[in-house]
Length: 208
View 1 (cartoon, helix red, strand yellow):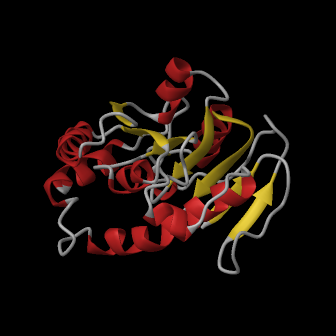
View 2 (cartoon, rainbow, N blue to C red; view 1 turned 45 degrees about the vertical axis):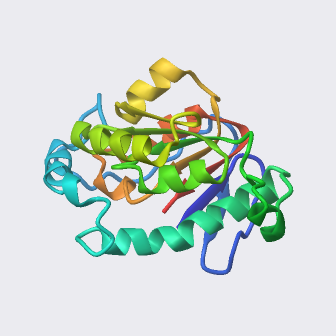
């Protein structure tokens, strides 16, 4: 897992790597996809593959079982890192009495799929926007969101990170999460730089 903080280097945990870079400084990573284009990071073959799995996203014993398992580790790490780095107070005792440790934090979940991580963060009080180029996954996410009663602080949109940068505007979020997505995009350089555009100065970028 990779955490990028916009101002300083921080070791969030012994198993996680943190790096820093100046605001708007371009980040360069190699592209591994033969489908890469200059205009979009979306890999249509990957979208098709995940569309075929869309109805199994919320089956904790199905093909996404491992993803649900990862979520139980990633969400606490993200919560604790946001609380630590953005100066929000939190405690397990307060949470048990209804306190939401991520209240007031705006998070963008890029490549959110059917909303497994988005919902978990919204339950902790964050205002979450989930985006994905897979319309079937987003439809399932919205249905699960409705059943969970999380309409107030959780929104989903069918779009890629390029469109989000254009429609939402720069420096809009306290934290950007790209979980299990960067290996599926056409151009890692373009993708990461769009994520940088969307996070506010001093905010956090999580790549897992």
